[in-house]
Image (cartoon, rainbow, N blue to C red; front, side, top):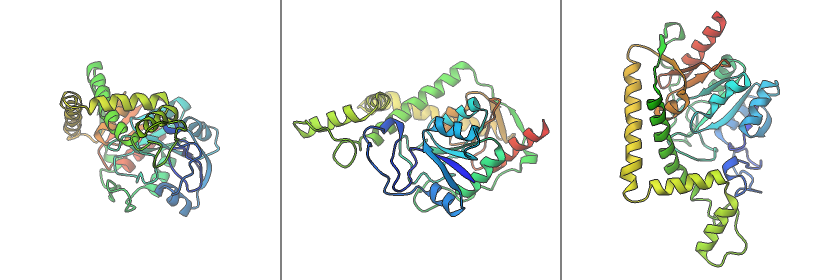
Amino acid sequence: MKYALDSGIQKKGDKVDAYEVQKTLEGYHAPITATVVKRLEEAGAELAQHAGYEANMVAVEKGMATFALNTDVGGEVMAAAENGLYGLRPSYGAISRYGMIASASSMDAIGVTAKTPEDIREALMLIAGPDGMDSTVFDDLATGAKSGSMRVRELELDEVRVKTAEVAHMVIRAAETASSYYRYDGIRFGHRAKDAKSLKDLYNKSRAEGLTEDSKKWILFGTYVLLGENIERCLIKAQKVRTMIIEALEKEMVTTEVLSGSDLGVIAALAGLPVVITPEGKQYIGKRKSDLALLQFVADMKEAK
């Protein structure tokens, strides 16, 4: 079995080439191996390539790899459909993120893409579960409804609800990403400017030279969100929206196990729920910890066509 690995997931000795911190980590080689990589190595899986998520999806599409592991903070795995693939963003806490370059800690996840839901399920069974390195990971992924008894219905989301969820996600992501990216200061590690005249100048120039424009935007926006009264005005309101989304989904799932719809990636990221996308672009979100049953449900639907 061969797999493709996101450049933001570390393998000891390999170059770390995560896009948003690409230049600041130029020449940096991973001192550790991520838990997911260790588990795949122990299972005899072979690394086909260690690259960006777009290249990894192409590798799966062309048969160079059975599945790909990619970092996901806001439903990026939903892009799998564009390559004719299935994609899973797992329940928050299903897979250890030890060895993954951190961004927004309350939403960071490792997504899986493959040509079939069965291949994703097999990969998930190899890499899921506690490792003692990520305190958010749970150990009872197999619990939940059996796929044969899972009920599904459409989740109706108007444009206002979708936009509200996207804004809440953006605010929370910005605050958490800014906090994560403060470490790239040119002192402890990362790109260091050569002509700085003071410590403050070193910080500023190192980040200006080493971070991408996207990274700078997240830091600036996140710093604004975390500034004084903006915490109440922006961040706390976004967190309240997040809580409302979680509570609304819990209410929706009292009488059903699967919700179908569109624009579910960001919602799943905010709620910490598993979401699967098919090559046709159909999206299904399940209860937390129901990842395996959700994948089996999608597989059964594929077979029933």
